[in-house]
Image (cartoon, rainbow, N blue to C red; front, top):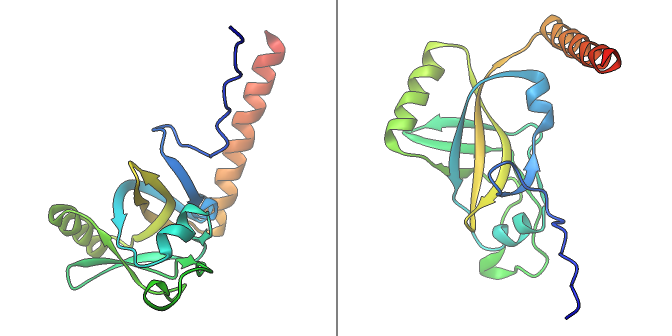
Length: 166
């Protein structure tokens, strides 16, 4: 009986096995991430199809709490070509995020107390549902960014020298 080759996974997955659709890599450079939260996204029409196709952009997007609801602003999901009429949507519309009430209250307290922001870090599918990973973040100054880069370079140099020594 001939052996068949195993199929390679072509989709990007995170360490939980979920399919990552988009990441906001710039966020970890511009912000110091203090805590992360997982939230569902309320989508309409062809947005899910566009998300599955990876046609989403997180740059410059952010979340805000208004009226006891968490809203995601400026996340661009490209229009789905086959969606017309009922399935059509605005690419940069405000989307509601789904969190438990106690999480929203906790976030509200932290955002009011400190000068923090809610930044989307990644969008992914978990068990067929669209999720967004939100980061409770503090903005970095230019000095802080340089300092983080210097620390990263020093750590890389130490690993390289340690590998050479072995």
